Length: 80
Length: 211
Image (cartoon, rainbow over all chains, first blue to last red; front, top):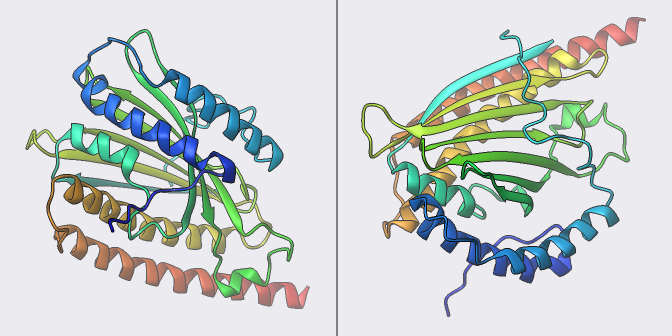
């Protein structure tokens, strides 16, 4: 029996949705995105289902993800 | 006060392979402390760049000397955010990773640039910078030293994890590489830094006893 180790989602009920989405994304990323093929993302529905689940889990666990803009803390910093 | 660290890493795989591995690198034998992984935001920009935000849960192990000073109720798990931009036209990837929990105690921020190695275009160069700071009164220097030591160990694990996943992707059996030797050296340096951190902590403790 082949045992494939995969990561869990922070939302215990979201792990299956996460793995399904990841599989779709990894294929699209390697076969389309990196080859600059812009013919569209086949994973959007899967992503929506997964996000609905995981964002709910994040709220329930009070994980402080709000209020940080993308690449947020990327300010000039001193060398020391 | 902020501790700054920079290093350059090399992976003997193409930039494409490394980017693919970036999304598939968990779990690996060197990532037992990473408990969960989730993409919580993703989009393709009009300029065809992939922007993503990944949320990680990690175990939050502190050395025994530090546990004495930490509140008993402190969470055992740490939350980390990793933002990334993949640019397939320019063949670069930029990542920014930082902790969103325990940040007042210690904040670690890491920025990486993944690009094609200029000397060998079938290899990938990683330019890594980190900023480590602590605001905990009396202990900040010790915590920063600990943070830096742990970060260096973590970089070695990250590179090993990447090499493991890349070798698996290419159908090879992962074996000892040059990075193993670098990892040994990093471990030794980290041990020295850890001892220094312990020393600083006991100094701070002694100061408090006489106040």
